[in-house]
Length: 415
Image (cartoon, rainbow, N blue to C red):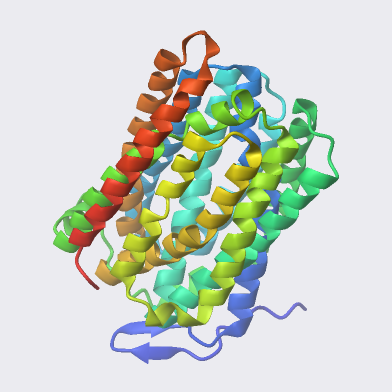
């Protein structure tokens, strides 16, 4: 009989229960997330390029960015309060992950840009719900110090797996659209295998149900609690404005990669290798120092760093300059990936992490979706006759907007 993973010691602080010091569960979580990252990174970074190969339309790229930001975050707002209420974290992770993995295989069967957009959006919805449940699970199960360490470990090892995927893609696989379709199938199969890992932890849901410490609220009561939190609302508004400025350039990146810099799939893989390597290394280095850093100041620094990437596209004449910019971006991404969830944990009501995270994801997702649509429309207007070189000037403007909206985070409450 297989021995199940043990909770280990339960540390109690007030009415909260923390599952700190449980290395078995942490290692299992890290292993599962790493395998899922390996699966997704064989395919996900090339969806924009695949769509650009099917159609050169900037609006189509914008619609893809809009739908994959707006609809998944709307689904999270609806799901968040119920994840908090019933706390079926593992069941939600398992179900969402299985469905998302099967959609990868379906994506490989289409060459229609509209159908592709629909399928990628559906997958983004289930991936988003899984991510929401995972982050809320970490917030509920572990203390403040352990949350940062675990998220950092998960991010670091996930990036290591992503790096492996990028290296394999760049060095061993013949770059072509047909190859991408095979990668979609491979990602689906490997992602399905990773999803099965959650079954071994399904008992945790039953254990939590016996001692449910959370606030049992429906959708509207939960949203009322969230929207009455002034610190959270302030952060939501500022971060969403910043994400709109970020998203303006998202439809332009694949267009400039293909039509201005003439990058191949291999070169895009190398681009991902550069960013992932620096992100992974920096994420690993800061794992044991996260609790010593000021959350607010770190968020400000990390978001300012994102101006460099848009600026690089405004001035780059070859892929090497983009490689350098993506390498520089890695540490800023690592800080942002870790400290934004930590900030939300600190300003949230205990036991309602999914509701708070879902609301943030919705507001920033809708802002990003709107920004993507505007960006895609701008691309089609100013890049008439397929003159995509004029997007360089637009990138310079976006870099300035990213910097201005990043500085707005000075106004958020210090926690």
